[in-house]
Image: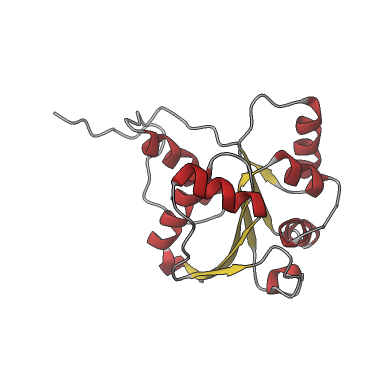
Length: 192
């Protein structure tokens, strides 16, 4: 069954994670019916600053404005079953944890939690303050998944992109997508 998902990008540093997530989603488009995208205002600026270009959506992506409360996923009656916020700023995380639905991103997160659907939050911040930790705890207790943008190294990534890919593949695995990616214990191909 093809899925309808939402990807929100907020103003935390780490636009590369969102960019690689979009690239991976394009590769698994056979598992997708629709991908809705929402950018916070700061996310657009950070994307352009870090990646040197403005975001350009391509199929199967549809972009919604952050104040568009008529977007289908602003309602629990929609068929969207997963929201990935990547990267997630601590401000957005705090608003979600405290039930403040002041834009489409936080409203969509509220919908996912209240409908017991999948919310995957990808904070890219360090170190965490006690406030951050308490907010992550609150979201976790409400049913959300906190997946910090912390690369793994057991697949022996050789480039920044390969390290980022370890996080992106973990996000998609948490979202229930089928991927052909490295799993712990598998042999790693070596280059001679």
